[in-house]
Amino acid sequence: MSKYDLSVGDIAANIVNRDRATNVSHHGMDKNHAQSSKHLDIAELSTSDLITDPSNSKIIIKKPLLMMKNKILLPMFAAISAAFFSTASIAGTELTSQDWQVACDNTRTCRLAGYQADNNSEYPVSILLVRRAGANATVDGKVKLGGAKESSSKALMQLGNRHRISLFINDKDFGETKPFSTATGNAELTSTQVTALIDALSKSSKIELVLRNSRWHLSDKGASAVMLKADEVQGRVGTPSAFIDSDKATKSNSSVLSPKPAPQLSLVLPASKAAVRNNKQFMMKSSELSALMKTTLKDADSTCPKLSDASSWRIFRLNNKQLLAKHDCWISAYNSGTGVWVINDRKPYNPKLVTTIATDFDKGKLTSVQKGRGIGDCVTKIDWVWTGNAFEKSHESTTGLCRMIEAGGAWQLPTYVTEVNIAK
Image: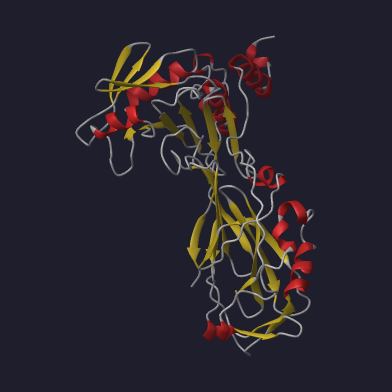
């Protein structure tokens, strides 16, 4: 049986086994630290918007509210990390194999990022290859040199717009990159360099990025597996435009999948105070509100342990009928998450859980930003926007592996993208 009689999954398995690849998430959490906090059984609201009855701790909301921030440490729990640091997106595809990863979003654009070997952090480096879907799509490449180590930082201090980075493959010089951009922190590869790099990554190769007397070594381990995954997502397997075995094509590029359009979302700004009619009120005990929200969670003790304590609720009006309710859910050594629900302002309340990992809410946009580890060199981000009836996911991405490239992560690698317009 020839290679082309094998399924894509069979070929991928062979490559992964060959490279001894492992699909391990780099977004693990430290153990959480328990700390108790005492709070009154009332929502955290401005006094002008809140009427409370001390005898029963009821909450009465008369007007749209402003957010008041509060920092709370939660008890230790472990199950939550697996819930939001999954390496697979519902809408896109993400695969990590040793020192390489690929993230393909819902439009079928694929981004492949490679790094130095995990045990070589003295000179951090990352390459990004980007290809959109479609038969005629080209591959763009960028290189980013890390500055987390002293030796790397010293070389970067000499770097400016006047200097360029050279690419060496198996000791052969493939020329200089385009000028380094201090604004973006990277340099674009030339088309010649991209072609040579793709060929080198499909087999065992020595790849170096050189600046003056400093050399950054790019690993090739795992590259074949992620390139094959990108080919699979874009329908390029067995075609001349495939990353893997393009010289053995059995199909034409006409079989390559076309790009998908990004979903269109309309962001509806929450109602202003003047827009709320009839001066509607919302009245519920904090303990009753917590009990109601627990019905939306399969395992509240794991996904939102703070919901059981007496810390405060924060309530925002979304429109003439619906409210946003927030409550601290959990905290780890370097991350935290807030539970967010949409609820009617009177019976039937019909609570709907949006997320338990929110970190910010502003002007109709919910955001979750979570570090992969304490030093913050890798980050996961999710956005949701209010569309008038519900919050819908508008963006999901990571910044790549935790490889000391730079604070905040090396790249934006989305698995879900949309086009968001503000509703008029």
